[in-house]
Length: 102
Image (cartoon, rainbow, N blue to C red; front, side, top):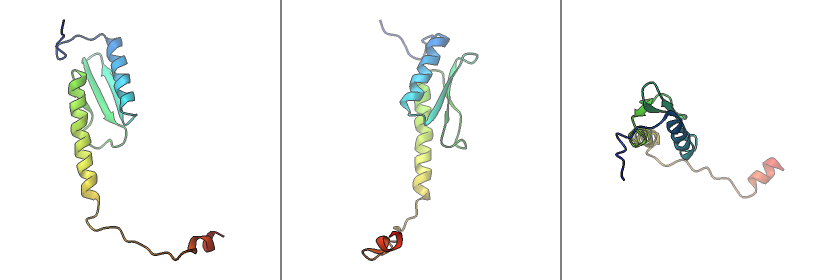
């Protein structure tokens, strides 16, 4: 017997448990909630609240895809913020730190 994930009815307790498991699998980078009144999962990034949030999905697959989209946008933003030129290398003679810190 196969169940279509998009139409499967999940109990509130099971949905809360799935949300907690998903949050744990993301290592706390995303806070995941189940909203029983809207029958939706919502996720908020714990690291940047300004980016297209919250994301939501009627099932975990939709939520996962939405989170990946936001993570991809954040990755591009971080990559754009990195300067194009290499960092400056500062030469320190051998033993310099030992002289300074004793």
